[in-house]
Amino acid sequence: MKATGNSNRGFTLLEVMIALAIVAIAMVTLLGLANRSITVNARLQKITQATLLAQEKMNAIEVAASQGTTDTTEQNGTFDPPFDGYRWEVAYKDTPLQSVKEVVVTVLWGDRQKNEMVDLTSFLFQ
Image 1 (spheres, rainbow, N blue to C red):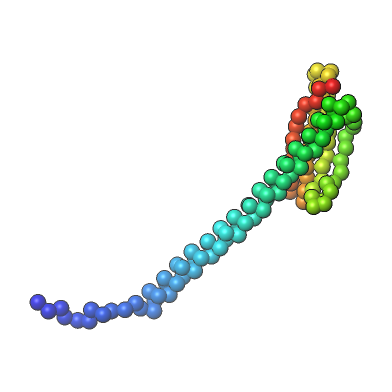
Image 2 (cartoon, rainbow, N blue to C red):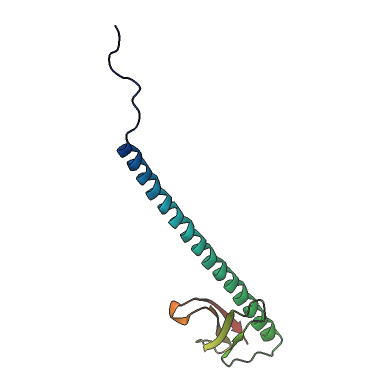
């Protein structure tokens, strides 16, 4: 039996336009996800760096406490370059035990309204 009619049918203009529209929507979505991924990665790097700076500051406080040269007044300042975009604050709080102080090291960066900061808490034995 012979097939009748034209079997070499191509895509219509409407089909091609719909396919291009679907591809365009997918590409825009993927580009948006890539941009979001870059933003999240940058924020995570800042959080990691701030955490390391807070640990460094806390270590300096603990070493000073072990040598008996701890100043338990609230302090603040900025870090030396290349970390001058970060600033630090140290707060001391009393605890129910006379010989123990709570120490909170806060490292901040960027805008205060965005709450971009890392807190590190420890206890000092005097």
